[in-house]
Length: 327
Image 1: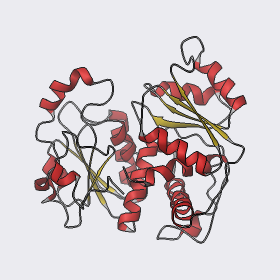
Image 2: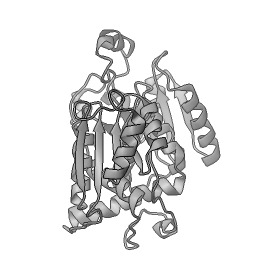
Image 3: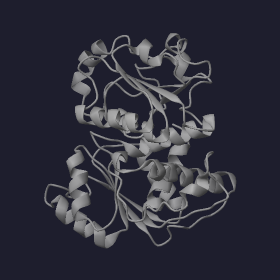
Image 4: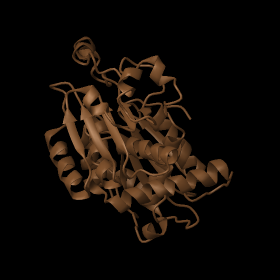
């Protein structure tokens, strides 16, 4: 996983609590125009709720903070005296470490809470949990099974709620992916990203974001594994609004044709272990290989959220110079 993911969470949390802006750095295409964008106090359950400029601002501030902290070796205690409650119903290495590291690097205090540590939805309702945490911390990141849990927390809390993953969306991962692509290609506008695999939460977040950044999106999923109908309809509307291309197909080679970026995700997510045998059969032919890349553009690259070899990509691609998985 790219180190960019460590800066994305800190960027996102920072932007939503107390706005920070350094006009000396920015994305190609006029970062100064983003100076009036304010995200103070905003929750982030899905990037569907964010405009093009708001998403660009999140990416811009992330790039700026990463440059100053990683390359400039600066100490920026922008979150000094602030605390984040990190609710994890589902385990995670990258989301937990990136959030804790990013928040600590900015001077804040992260507090990790599992289902064994708190009584969310059991002895204590989501409403009570939201109200208690609102009085004890400044922001909540929740990695949950059901998106409705996030929505209930957001309704009842007086502080921002950040989606660390739900079954419907995974917005912070997609911010990290687009930051990675921004750094690699220099510009996002005009890129073609091809998703080959399951129509899952990660794809849904790509679909809610790509068009707003001027990115064309081509999606190949097996029949029966298509993305959510409501998400698809919204993505089609966004594509038309922003003048980008959205292609939905069941043919991986069609999706990969002429693409800059090939993206996939695990075919068997947490909670789907009993479906593994059937899923591996259904996804036969969807593995990303160098043959898949042969129909993409000459400068094609590969993205995946997990820094380990899975069935959905072969070693020749995963460990090649085209892979952006490792820094």
